[in-house]
Length: 273
Image (cartoon, rainbow, N blue to C red; front, top):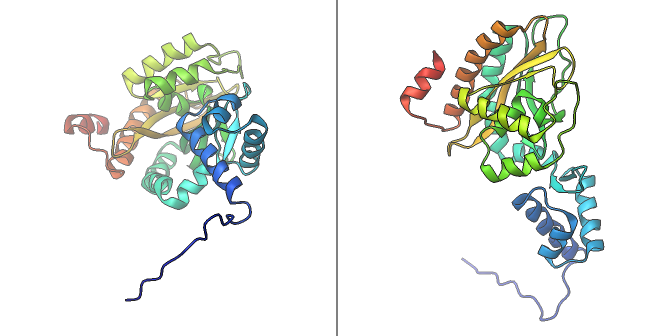
């Protein structure tokens, strides 16, 4: 076997543009390590002046790799989800969830979706349309404000304390009169969600729309997504939502099991009942 030795001349210049790429990637990693950090903090952490850091961040933003909150904090962007699908992580969740989404849509005749948290939004990773003529329009790839969605609540309720506090410290826009637009109200709601294991949204995102969701865990027990069923309030009353919620908890447990999550046997049995 012949060994090939690659040599670099001392003082040789890197390929054109290499330094900018490396700086941009380091900024991307910094955003990932501390989502919600501002320009000043990111530029100081990377030893860059603000002008250079801003230029690199806006380039990443143009490709959807990072995004800005209204308060000018930087977070990971939705295109990283697509990259994750290609790497296999998110694809595993979609593959594990697809049979359950199809079953939920068939049984309830409402739209069933799989959603992940991206910054302060939930992103629809996959969905299966229900059988009713009047229903929700296809929206895979769409983002919604997490605090106003059942899936966002289901994920946030089980987030680590630091991430949750950072989210609650950010802006909570009011989309309808029923939106939980204060940190206190949302915190109380998330406590209830964590206690019962599923979340709802009652006309908090849009008038007339209601939904229910349950969290999905990975092999390490981290909540990585949520499955939901949603539709018009004329069909999804309180008793119907409670019934669907029990089915969703079982579906989420099955998806989590396919991802390698192994809760106590009693917990999984309870989720199926």
